[in-house]
Structures are given as structure tokens and as C-alpha cells.
Image (cartoon, rainbow, N blue to C red; front, side, top):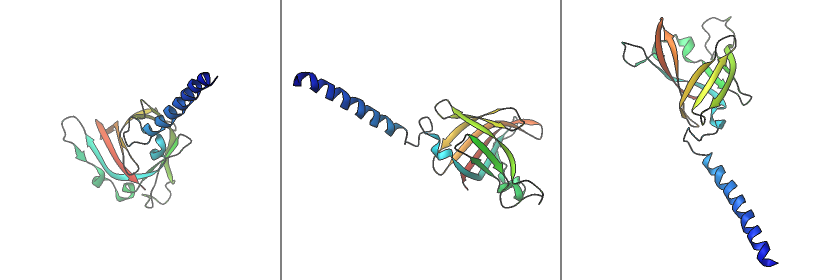
Length: 156
């Protein structure tokens, strides 16, 4: 009787240990295994880099109007986001939320689809996601030229 019970106990312990061990993989700073918990907060620009055909990689953050430099991105746990005006608005009548939409992580949390309300979905690559840094890479246009943008964000 004891010989039949011991294998069941060992099997149960192995299952419990394997489940506990799997949770440890989700706490690293490696974006490929990162849970989206770090993402859920307000982020502000630290820099914005752009590269377009025929032009070198350039920081465009300092060329933004002051009223746009303090804008924020807020990712919420209900898979929605807001791109909002910071404390400084370009016009007093500007709404607090410049843009809203939904987001979905995929590809082991290294990519995201962001769909702004009323606009087509945009695929974004997450280059880095830690408690203190979010680096997003996406395609856009600058003065009519196709460009690759890297938004470097820090907590707001």
C-alpha cells in the first residue's frame, strides 16, 4: 500500500515544483518573457529618434514644440491606451487626451498592435520593457518621407 502511495506523492510534488519554477521565468527583464505589468503606467518621452532614407539617425525630440515634449502615453490594464497632453498644452482648448485606442501584445510580448480610435492599426516593436524604460519602434512619416521612429519613454 505504501509503495503505491509514494509514487503519487512524488508525482504531485513534481507538478507543484514545475508550476512554481515556471513563475520565475515571468519576472525577468528580458522582453521576450516579460509580462505586461511594467507596461501598465504613464510614460513620458525621454527622446525620439528618427531615420529616413538619405538621412542619418536623428533625435527629433528637441525640435518638438515645448508643449509636445511633455505629452504622455498611458497603457491601461484593460488593454486601452491614451496619448495625452502633459501639463503644457499647445492651445488651452486642446483636449487632455490627444488620442485613445486599444493595444494587444503578441510574439512573446515583443510586439504590439496599437489601434488608435478612427485610425488603422499600427504594429509596434518593443525594443525594451523594464520598470524604468520603454523603447518602441514603429514606422511613420516625417514631412512626407517614410521614417522609422524609436520612442524612448520613461515613467511619467
